[in-house]
Image (cartoon, rainbow, N blue to C red):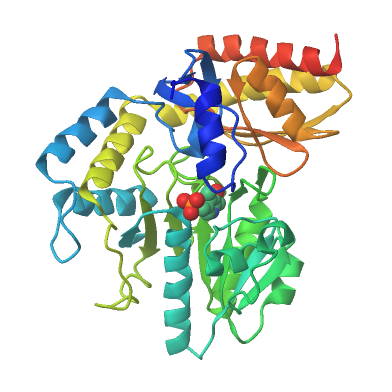
Length: 399
Ligand SMILES: *Cc1c(COP(=O)(O)O)cnc(C)c1O
């Protein structure tokens, strides 16, 4: 078999279950760009779906992975590894929550852990188990996290789903209040919804959820799997709202593509899990933890939070200029480098046109184009990319 796009795509279609419909075969990445097997270069404004926050193959991360892989790739949780322990301390410090961390391997698993922790605590505190989640939210693909994801398109065909999830409307505190019963134990939400359309919570809503949780003795759980690790210009998106959750979850960008998830708690809920009450074979894997420690160093040393705030504003302004130019472009929304462009029409068509101009982007629902560039994106690359994005719209909508 030759190593070109069509041959590999044909093999993919015949041997890989069709849960995705990709059209590109990527071979390598450097910084904000990736290269396909036919040697064409693209700006990666997907960051591997919010994973490569420090860009592809950052030398610090590559070195950390290589060094740890040569020393030990896995040690099981029957023993302690230093990188995961140091990472737990880092995450607790960066969050200011003063609690503890449970490590796992993906976003769904981190949310599953949050759900289990909340239920375990609820079972000891009034026999409560219901969790209120937001319509248009997204929490993963395991049965419990799918039940937490209140959207018909991804639940279809999987009945019966685990019970105990109640849906409310995002940014509507009255709707959340109405969903809370004497069985409720937690409220779970994304501070900036990703898959659901790149929609930020309002400050009033986040504060309202916090106040409601305090009043009714509920856990506030923030799913930071997509919006965390600097993407919105603060370490964690909830930090942009002057509130503190009781639990929050991380995955995607945590270890720059080495699978890793984490559940972080405050002090109150730090010891709800006890020996044998929850577990993961690979959780806290030393290679992943070493990568994550390097990611945190890079974000700190290269002042990437500041870069997000500055460069994302320029990006938003450039997109707003396109919205002003084309009637079919309706709105720019999001926060930091989670950027949504609402279109009057099919977002997929736009993503294809962007790919034609060598820009990789995503959709978030039927009519939102989603841009998630690496946080390392500089002004020069941004200008270049904006020209290409502009060309793509000229192609679709005509000059
Ligand atoms: C991607 C995502 C998940 C699921 O993460 P996986 O690693 O794919 O299991 C959960 N929550 C949010 C907000 C996500 O964006």
